[in-house]
Amino acid sequence: MRTLHTVNFSNKKVLIRVDFNVPLDENKRVTDHTRIKAAKPTIDKVLADGGSCVLMTHLGRPKGVDDNLSLRHIVSEIQTVLGVDILFSKHTIGPEAEAQAQALQPGQIMLLENLRFYEEETKGDEQFANALSTLADCYINDAFGTAHRAHASTTIVAQFFPKAKYFGYLLAQEIDAIDRVMSTGEKPVLAVLGGAKVSSKITIIENILDKVDHLIIGGGMSFTFAKAMGGQIGNSICEDDKQELALSILSSAKEKGVQIHLPTDVVAGDQFSNEANQQIFPIDQIPDGWEGMDAGPESVAAFREVVLQSKTILWNGPLGVFEFSHFSQGTIALGEAISASTKNGAFSLVGGGDSVAAVKQFNMENEVSYVSTGGGAMLESLEGKTLPGIAAIMA
Image 1 (cartoon, one colour):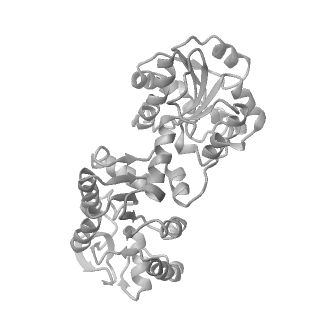
Image 2 (spheres, rainbow, N blue to C red):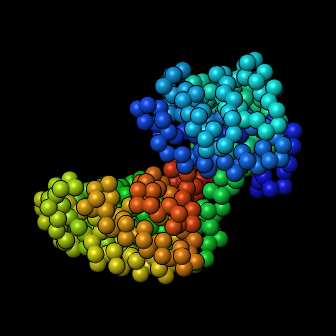
Image 3 (cartoon, one colour):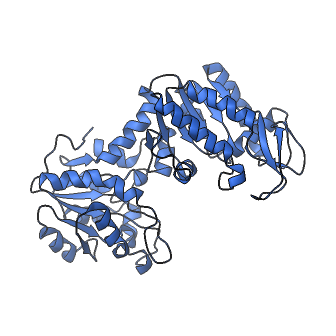
């Protein structure tokens, strides 16, 4: 891989695609600095070498110029995290941006205005990408969260740096983490897939059945499997049109020698509310008027045993409605088991919006090996797709 270890950026201007698409509160204050912190090692490397950085990112999904989504609102937060003054360009391309970039001195950082103020960014416009390329001598992509998009700043711009394009440290880490799960990880390999719908995970399941030894299926999609096998699931969420698919997944797993672990019991509620009355039922014997909302104690214990014997673990999706504190115990217990397995030497990768939210909510993000910064990009990688932002650096 074209990584940064062997490159010296002394006196070079470096165009870095970062992912500072951070959450803001009503006062435009950053509420989660994770993505800014994640880019710091790459930026630090360029500055330590004696280079300068031109940072580019998007924020939100503006339709044209929208001051609410101007990056000027987050400049002070970026300065705090990076520990370096930031020069802000009100323009993303054009003569003024070029003049500011030209004037950059070694050790300085310049942040361009929101890329998505220009529709050419998401269209992957070549002229727009070329205009970005004039701002620097080298290009680094360190934005895994957008690597699945063939946008101007993530993919197209790389062609203008045929011999000077590189993976940032974060992007390289993400690629390595997924590679460890999909091909190089120590066996037994376990994937834990949760969430509401089989349909949103089907491509992942089909792709990873050749890569894993164990597959835990939890969360809402487990009820589609339970019903397909003749179970009574009460009012639980179910994709009736995916029952055949669920049975074919079970059959395919058996052929490939993959052990599938489904919940055997669930914590059910009599309404979709944190204050619902609770009762534990076998997953295939849930009465009408009740819906499964968390993995039951028997399932949690069984899943823990599988997790503890695994050497490589992927976690994508919660085991229940963890946003409700009264139905969060299954997800917490799974996180604790993965944490224990990691302490014992396993490699654990957590990815996908809800799983990442869960490990953060329950303060477990430092107890697993790696927490992915990219939701859609992570899912497409697990589906076996080559991400355009990655392919562009390797070309």
